[in-house]
Amino acid sequence: MRPYPKGFRPSAETLKKKHLGLPALILGGGPTLPIDVNKSPPESLKIAVNHHAYFCGIDADYMVFCDRRWIQPDLNEAVQQFQGVKISIYQGQSHYALPDDAWYNGTSATLAVWLACYMGCDPVLLCGFNCYQGSRVYCHDDAKKPSDIKHLVNAPLQNHLDVWGPAISRCPNSQAIRAVSGPLITIFGSWQP
Image (cartoon, rainbow, N blue to C red; front, top):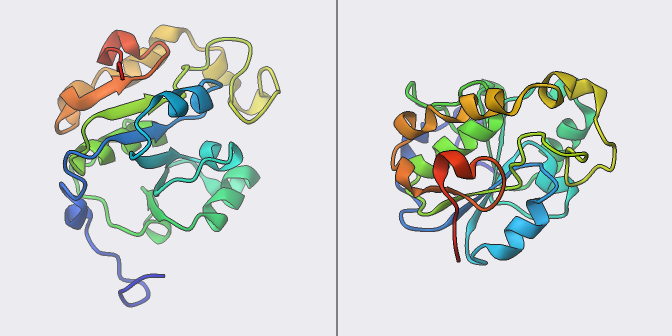
């Protein structure tokens, strides 16, 4: 799978501006994910956040995960099955070593957005980012409010928006970021086809 010796990871510098001008879809896990993807340009690069796209049957080119997969069976399964490029803050699980200025603000989703901006994608479209609002949390699960993420589900919307605000200054080419739907439109604006 890798064109380099076992244990060696190239720097993510090799990804800088790799997809210049190519639209990118950041595949979140919210219930609007399939709808948002269908509205987006079909020739887009697809960057999965954790395991959600996998369980929705959406193929991705990259998978970004910062969550601890060894304690989450669904995420672990998706990472093991994923055939594309894996990007993670965990050294042994990422195809690339992230640069020191990589921004992730503690979430897989923010790292995925930073990566798309770093690779020069334009626009960078947020799909399935509902910020845990509404009766359904995930696109692939009918459970109303999973107990393992109750700290996220019970947090006020403003807490979720506060996580995203720094993207404006921390992501290169942040003016390319747009939300296809959901609360993040208030920060990044709405993408219109």
